[in-house]
Length: 286
Image 1: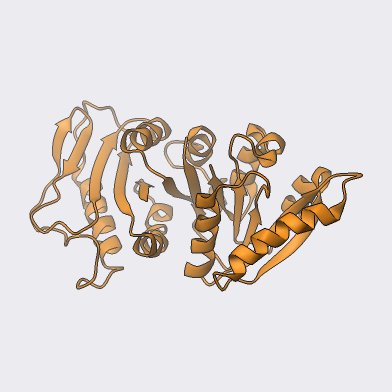
Image 2: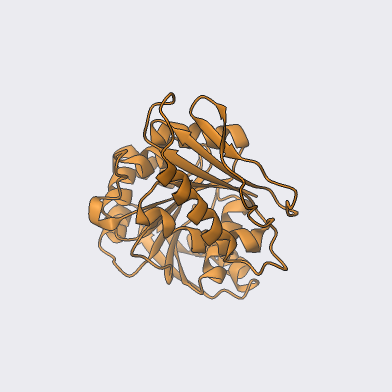
């Protein structure tokens, strides 16, 4: 697994590191810490931003026992060097661990840089933070989380600063869901000791028994991983109101693959509303 953590200089970015470290440790993931500074590519990189990235890297590595960390230690005096205009990297150093950890700073418009970097490294998950008090925008940068979530070719986790994952709402298309997405939900529930609610969609004149049978297979999957999910049946036409009217979930996970019914229901403006207005963190699975 390869995870890209997108970071700016704000507190909501620092907030993501500890949680993602736990996911990275459990999945044995390769990591890219990508700092984005909103300046022109020919501008000088401020020392205060490199200091911020130093702190982020140290905070991330401090989440691991040094004797068992999959990532090598942070090398002293290992400065960032400009490898291309507007792209600064830190070399891995001689103490590289068994898993890759890249630390990179890029300058420019945040959402475009994140999407370009994700495609370049072939990541499986993009993680970025935001603050619920500012409609989940980046400052500066605007609605970066939504633009990344809408356009990324991989799964995206938008972590709200004031939210801890204690209860997960999982909107899984029981006919089209991928194995990787099922496993991602399992990881999030286990790592954060979170209760799991699974929504099953029903349609008018459709036998609920057929939906329950398919959901039973999902339930068995999670039970085999010692997760006890709660199943809720929701009418397809009521789904948006159901999600909007509930405040008990700290994380809303939604399968948004090309064939998913949720992709058809939650078109772009509704996804933007979900990310911007909900107090819950949002995981869009692809």
